[in-house]
Amino acid sequence: MTGKPRLASIIEALPSTVPFVGPEAQERQLGFNFKARIGANENVFGPSPKAIRAMQNAVPDVWQYGDPENYDLKNALAAHHGIAPENIMVGEGIDGLLGYVARMMIEPGSAVITSKGAYPTFNYHVAASGGNLLTVPYRQDREDLESLIAMARSENSKLIYFANPDNPMGTWWSADELNSVISTLPDDVLLCLDEAYIELAPENTAPPVDTDRPNVLRFRTFSKAYGMAGGRVGYVMGEAQMIKNFDKIRNHFGMCRVSQVGALAALQDQDYLAQVISQVNQSRNRIKDIAEKNNLSAIDSAANFVAIDCGRDGDFAMSLLSELTSQGIFIRMPGVAPQNRCIRVSVCTEEDLDLFEEALPVALEKLRRNSA
Ligand SMILES: *Cc1c(COP(=O)(O)O)cnc(C)c1O
Image 1 (cartoon, protein in one colour):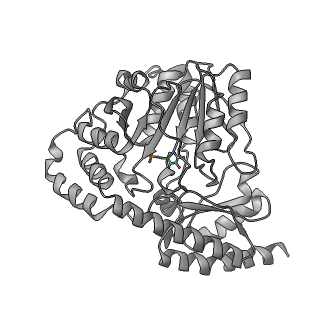
Image 2 (cartoon, protein in one colour):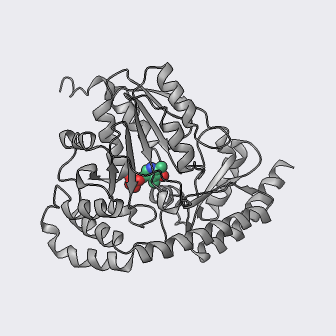
């Protein structure tokens, strides 16, 4: 053979990496299974039993494609949010929908603005479109929307990514704070507001959805509070014309019909959601207690995880993470300074937290001895 198929030049230049090494891949490398899977912000409490039943009942029909218009789910979501179905697009998780936004908005060389150390999956999509990713540091462990907008102006960018609550820190802005900053957003700059954890945040964190505003898209998911990460169901809300643009490029048959049915049933069981929210609250409090008992401080979180400030640098937090890994505890940590002084622990069962509570002082003691 002479030669080989040539990739598009933008893709050719990219590394083949993953934003997060999955716990299964880590287990294969380590040669043992984790005792506590508390690193991926999955919702260990799982979906509503009604959603599970609905999905079980839907399994025999899996020979059928899912409804490409997601009609039932979209209409239920519209009623839930008090907006029209035209203001909603359902897709393969927020991750999938962010990929569509990148394809819709970015040309090679386009400046795209995000926070330094923010949720990284968006950045992958930006790279694949040839966008030029520019970052703004966090301010006091919060993403800094004012500075993101200022940079969009100064760099002539038309696309901003911002998560509220934030991952990996769990910090958040109130709806009032957000609204006043969003009012300064230039008309031609699109703000992608990732609200993956919004159901778990205090009331008055989410501004009302303004469907007259083409320059804000709101991203939601069934992966976190609704406990269906493996089902891959997300949705985006916004002005009708902006939403319709997704039809130009989306994978119309990308949704699994079992997941469509499950998400609908999960949405309809708000009592169960309320129960999960209270379990998440309890678990967050206990993670905070465990941190404090070990002379570490927990950062207040509006999400289903807690960032624990280890009080030292990124190397120290990384060593702590490795020690916990070797004890069978799967957690993650922020990737860049100064947030990488923290480890990030997902909310979980009491049994998981018992294991964490046992492992943490052992790991800290080991590090102390190693550095003595
Ligand atoms: C977990 C997470 C996502 C992923 O959502 P999916 O709907 O599962 O793709 C997106 N954004 C943030 C900030 C997250 O933490």
